[in-house]
Image (cartoon, rainbow, N blue to C red; front, top):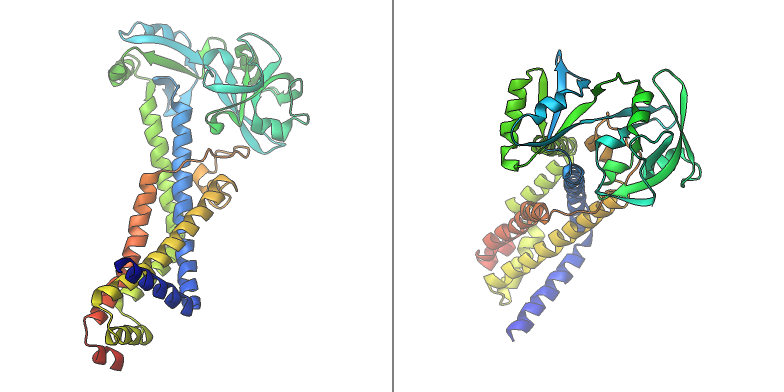
Length: 392
């Protein structure tokens, strides 16, 4: 009997929603749009943070750069031998990397000397990596293959212009991807010798030094010793880089939310309107239900289900659309703002990632307040004498 009563209340609730289908459709549309905006930002921000963590999970414990007048400049390779003399350092070696602007594709590529940085976390699709001193060969990311290589296969040729304006041709021996597409999609891996020749790097210098430490708990201490021994250096800890990326993506996410403050304001006004009172028609309906024998708890249950149906429908629709937008449509609305103007990557697809904690927070600050704003004014009307309610 109790189950039948609750089923009848739910059935009446659905019929009531259908009677006001245009009003409820408008509420669901606005609610869905708000959830879509915020959900898209949450999905994109946390997916990019996850990609950044994947990118840096096998990176050196400390990166040492040489500074002059507040700017990063090439560092002497011999400095690595001096750093190796610090107790606790397992290895310290040079890294050769930089950026190459492709005027044809209008994109920045990352170029890397293979002897300086391991790519063990990458899974080669086809081919192989160049060896340390192999000349005229390269491995490239899938994004570069899409925009530069006609055949998109092993044996194709990639042409790059060196610092003197002369063209160098590279035979493609590998096309690869990794757990993090951001790492490999715009990447060109070549030998150390080819890298130095391409950028005309002076002998005995490197882009920076990669330092690894035996005991992770000693990383800050060793970084401090490096700074103390070499005042013109800048030790950068891996954890600091990850925190910086998290902070940047969080800040940019907040900026996008600010741009859509109008939609958020519309939702707040909608919820406030629901919380401050019922329409005359709704009050009359509650009075009639009380007059025919409905209890206050029955009316509150009806309004509860009404709020649940509208809010959860909107929430699920908004989350699903946001998921499709971010992970299947390339996040075309928000990706440029979160990636930043100076990072021009070829197109890449984010690995689907959902932070259920953030989804739970979004659910709690949208669905629960809406349900509450539906129940509270109904409770006020339900505890009032039916005659008074129906007379207004």
